Length: 404
Image (cartoon, rainbow, N blue to C red; front, top):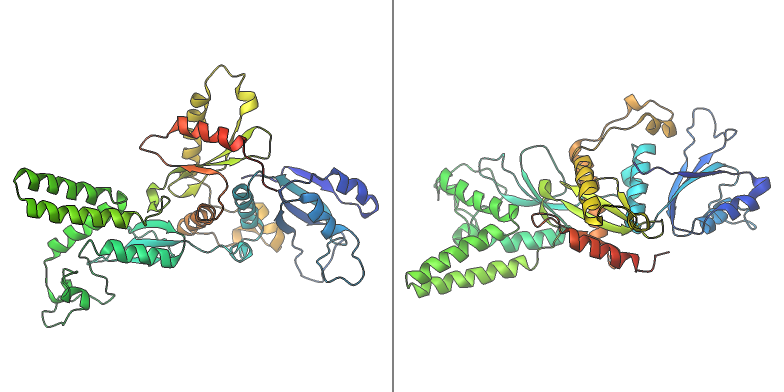
């Protein structure tokens, strides 16, 4: 967890010294109540958590004497101590704010952060006749989850386009394999194997579902390879008409894949490295993502690395390997301090399921990835990590003016 590693006691009588000691830098901060603050019998006193691009200015607005009858929030009579962490990017701010909101406000942190699960595609493999559809829930049900997408509409558009390449069902009815059933429009257009009226065997349908799964798991590569092999075989057999038809199918697949965002992939294989400028000078924060889960960053301090006997690439390999292990097995439990703001015990708090925890991390990642403009860079394994490109990207980021 990225701690709020700086703190100052607030004394209204010495406010000038307090404000002068605050950096005018981006930060996530927490204003804790003083011991004498009371809100009535049985009422809990909650600390104030927020982020800002100018810490000194924001706390001056919150803690200085209000001018006249202002309706602006003022915490002068409430504040006893301010804790904060300087941040170098919006992404780092989002991660720090999420971690502390989740700890301090376990029942309402999603509303506090306006954190909505990302849009995903799901193939419900537990069903006898699976189909692919858009969802925002991640369950431990053995299904294949693919994403995240920027919006539900974007997921639906890609789903409709790529499913045109296959013949799995899109209806939501219970399949009874009744020959008297009239079927749907997709079966009439020969775009579905029609298991509803026994238009195919269970084995034939399973083969088609397997092709869909392989398409998503390989981000389209499996189908591209299949059509390329068939086209080459048709050409060798001098079946040029079939080769031309396969070439048109290949062009259709390529067109569909043009609409697939780089971040969207099989969720349990969503591995990435996110580079962000850090609050420290000449430093890059490296966030490792493993299976959609974001690990706490490690920091590449290039001022210190210049004097190291090992190469930057060797140090990056070692630290990234350790960070990916940490991201794969994160702690999803609330710490005892999580209950302090609620006046209860941690044991009485509802624990988030792993699916919720994963969805929250992917929501943070998708919110940053699809933002415009997007600060920082992201890299994916190919299949190994492109260490040289990552190091060059660090150099570019160090030369970029800091936000805020």
